[in-house]
Length: 261
Image 1 (tube, helix red, strand yellow):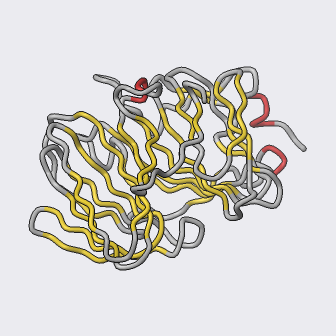
Image 2: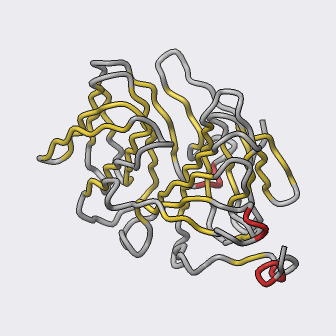
């Protein structure tokens, strides 16, 4: 294990812990966990003084919050877009699985109030980036479920990336002052890639994660033959929220924008 990368496992209760406020990844300032849920199982999430996002990774679930109830489904993260319930502090979210399902729960401390919202695949469409650039080997599809522009009173950002097989992501190498967490999944169990955090390199595999301190460069790569999914989660800093325009690329590599391959 490392304070910037982890290989967690599900416990006997179906919970897999990534970052908390007091484990070795506390610099992320978020509590992030993934849950396996059996058909018929119900889990309730409630955190006083914290906002909560519940993202469906796969399966079929019914979500209940405030006076609302919605049933949503997702075959997997590689073929269908996201469903996510996002609520402010002191708001409970109950999840009931209609079939074997997997969900990610992202929380952080936040005393501001904002309207609860269910984000659908139509709200977070996949968009290709870097097509034709860098020798055409940095192709990826990106969606942003919510960020500072979409939810300005939130302290978090949540989105997803799908790397084309054998392609790079987050390229050119870039940094920003806000901490960021990546959860990786691959379309085959033997799939793998490379995760860079500053000058350290780790083998990314299914359900591994990267805990990127603010200011560190963090490009990623997927091995040929494997599609890589990344759930990306950023924690805003007080008075310094992450913005889509905040991408600060390593000046050693910016010449590549105009290079011919």
